[in-house]
Length: 264
View (cartoon, one colour):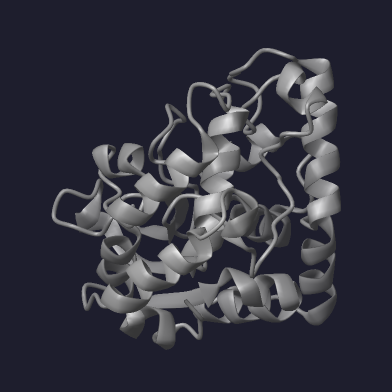
């Protein structure tokens, strides 16, 4: 079995790329769990077996180290990178989606902890490392070819980015197929799918769908497929956080921010 990873630090667009690739290869999914079955998540208990032909495409949030699962079967990867400020805000939304409210985890406290750790400490404990460690591990490796795509460029022109991914993976797809897959995987389409599934199955976690969260958090306007914004301000959480972000990331990781065209 050969594995091609769809890799990213959490909350960087991995699920979106899974839907894009699934839709390109198999057509629009009827259910979100269809994506998990065809492009499994190495962190979830979904069967992880070789397809009848071709490589297995799989999701990972783990940093690329000697401890990464199935490293001996890994042949290439698509790496999705996102501005860490937007990762921070999306991570906060994820905690809200999982049911952790403002009282249990104040937004400003989460943001400052993220800045001090250069990532979410919970994700570090799960083996993902900090944002910078994760990005470097995948984009500076010589183990196998890696194609890097910025989340921001996916937002600007998803068909163009999907076309580049397909070419890297050796997938033969014409422009019409690319456009259909991008349309089927738009934010509006994925949000509508999430809403339908949560209305039909309100349990917080389920084996028959990909999106976490239940009907109650959806009613509060908290979704896995969130706004997908870029270039956001942290001052909406607490005054001065934008300055703190610029100081912490800009001082120690200016090279990474510059490499990917990000302002602190």
